[in-house]
Image 1: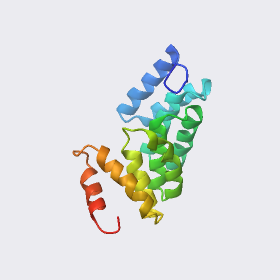
Image 2: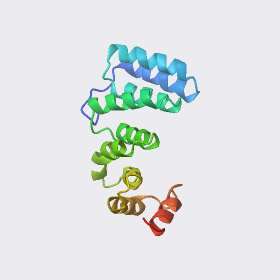
Image 3: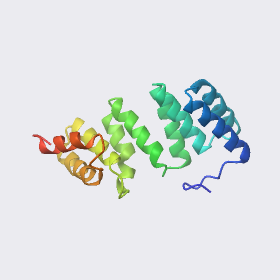
Image 4: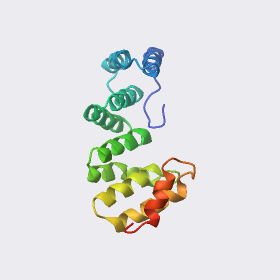
Length: 163
């Protein structure tokens, strides 16, 4: 069993996942999609294939398809942190901050998380809820590695006016 309670992939599923991953690594997304759809035709709840396909669609700037697939991953495994974060990030970048906050909320209990805190805080700021945003941004700043690319901007945000 995987972490979320789903079954380990069969040898045939592992083979198709491997082929899809190899295709995606070399930028052959069309072939990767074919392999993943073939796998999903046999098992529509295959969490890894759903997540990989969502990631490919996100890479191809097909946000609606990616979001639908991330939702399917979460239907299979509500505790999948990658699907939850990626869906929340898609919602945030698509100008839907309320949806992003709602999607990311369950990830805020993870004591090592900083990205869900960051994007939840940013989404709350977009909603004009700066008082609710600040504690989340402060937690993000405490947990985020100082060499992270976003750290200087986060510090600037927290030290600036109206934060």
